[in-house]
Length: 239
View 1 (cartoon, rainbow, N blue to C red):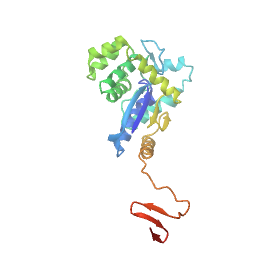
View 2: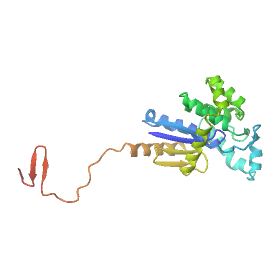
View 3: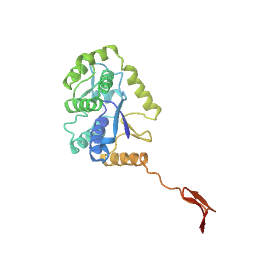
View 4: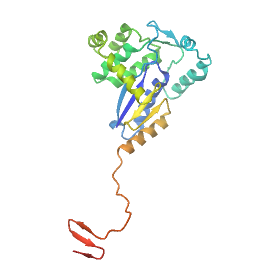
């Protein structure tokens, strides 16, 4: 079974859903047979490289100042209640994540995509880490054990830029208007964050539908006769 998970590393709901997905798969009896594929969805590509504070971004977007207490602080409390701490959804800066996503695509090609996504979420939300410039992203790459020279070449050549853009176009084609956006075995999507129990229920449903055993079709009328390998039969006798 395949779960495709579109997200951005500056999205607090995405970091929380990455944590919940780990929890749900740990509880799912077929968790080892589920393939998680992370895909890119950039939320703020036009932010300055220096970054802006979360409070400043709220102001730039024209959103009410109550967004902090109404939306972001509850995310922090939910993360803490679920064992994900510290989790800084407010006291951090945000910036363009193109280099970060290109590094994540490089990591995927090295067979380390999922663990690098999780590590990047933890770096940003756990440490309020800035990951907007190539230098910041390469420092992170070295810390998580990726080959720095290979990562530097990937960022310098921008060879993953097309893949990152294609991920976002595919999400939008499937109906995504933001992140997180999860697709389960190509059968149905979950746009936005849901709780771990609900996530586990969706995973179980997708698995059941994808592994449904064949059942005999219902009989709609009696037959006059039937031939089988051991002979042909009518209701009361065999020929």
